[in-house]
Length: 272
Image (cartoon, rainbow, N blue to C red; front, side, top):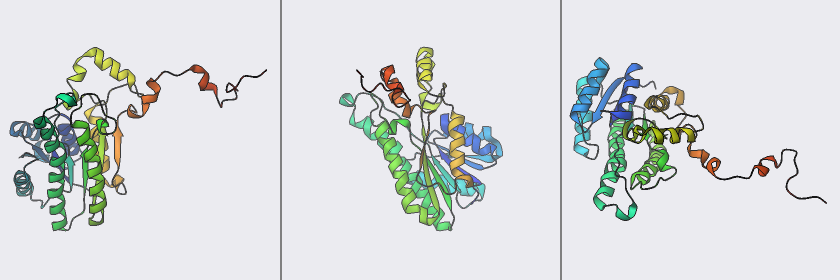
């Protein structure tokens, strides 16, 4: 199944806008969905004939259905072939001081919003007798927690398992579901972090590839997972982080002597 149309949530700006733009450049019809009608319209207009602006809050089931109806009305397509669940928010802060309202807001948008949008999309695909693909956007923070992350990391870990659940249940129905986990990406909600040149430099130096990621880095992996090239990939979570998540041990103190053990040097014991 070759995807020709995709709905991207949280596509009015940041990472979602770049994913939508990459899909449009590939010739796909793109639904640019955002709860901010102004940014959705601006992004869609910039993409031209390949895009349609859709206004919806992903925590609102009725609004999601209306957006899918609007997509069908404008494009003449019964349903998109693919879905990218990118919409998300942050409410950072120490857990001891974290308010219940902030916690619920992040869970509602990030985790529940992903579920509600994916379910609505999958129901329409099944009803139309079509195959399709879903990509969710998780985070390295769902793999390894960061300080003062509030509910963010927990929701991203939850989305990863939800994606596996969708892959398990919907795979037999012809719907693949995979996740992309961005790392240190200089885009979207992370952009304020890298406005500080010292912080940017320190973070860049921790990445094995020696650079921060870009929105385009993430978008290219999303499009790969949606494509026929990934036709046998289902339930996977791909880290797009330059290797930083797996490099934690390299930042810990280590005696040089142990680097020679097993390399023809017997430093494991002393000899008389």
